[in-house]
Length: 480
Ligand code: BG6
Image (cartoon, rainbow, N blue to C red):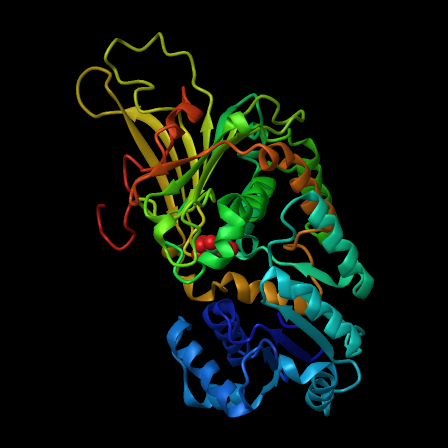
């Protein structure tokens, strides 16, 4: 499960939002279940803290955000593995702290540098690591955004490569660390049932829909520069699309998987601005830190195509946004409809849309296959029925690793399967160029809605699956 060698984690941005919500609680969980024995964690941030101050900050983050119960014994062991270096102390102090942490860990121990910092702070941190002489025996985890367009991504990659080799760089996309995302691969390639129909002959269109109810909280500074397309689509949604659309890799290993994903990206047609709806929720412009004339989109819906033998002509509809009606993460695959003329008028065949296979990407993943079946009784009346699977039912929910935990562990083990490559990222920026150069105007939408009205034109003659007509069955309710 765990890495072969003991690890020293250098966590830049150790008091920031992501570290508090995910990384410190995740490292705490990995250490308390025994996956990373001997691991030492050195927090680095702009805050002028001493070790005690950092321990207090870590404890409060874990108390607030850890999904599991914190025992004093686990906390004491974790607290003893922490160290702290304020950024202002510079590379020499950082090197001294790493040397100290490595004492007793053996010559084979590895370093995991985690850059949980805003884009402007990433390259300075990389340079600091270079100056501190902390590149050898190390891997570096980078957070998005990986550039803001093709030119900036190429420059960022070039500058990164001045210090770290590509095989040391782990670009994290936490959606790929979610259990259900990996389950797409298992579902597609471990079963004989669906792969034969996983193509343009049988599939009509695909939706990847990730509405969020969340607003921006304290993130407006970051978000104003980013917007929904860069924050969610270029990273998470396109990565999920690649898992859904790729050819079977020759092995479930990093190089073959990256190759197949990159082939999907290479086959993507450039995104056309006319196939995109950009939205902004009313009230966004008056939030703190937001330009009163901001054109940043808090919502995006688009249609894109993968022009290869498997998918040519099949539209992929993607949607995501903030302050929407529901928080959901689904992939929905609509199958082509059969000829229906044999059914009597009024039978209801096709009346509730095509058959669908739907994946819910929540940690407790669910899947559903909907189809038409006969309603009991006289005549031939059809109803939309569904087969549903919920991970809840397996009793294995407790084994689920949170996405960041899984990915941190993989990076420590040097397993790149679920990480993105420089080539893939650059291609995604390349297909985005038209859109970034000539974005359609943002349209306002009321908070709590499903986005601007024009989303319906975008998908016509189809319809958005969400909101679901029939809710997921509640696994805790008998007969639901
Ligand atoms: C982050 C985005 O990467 O993913 C956020 O920056 C978004 O804007 C979040 O809310 C969604 O992640 P999750 O795991 O909560 O679905």
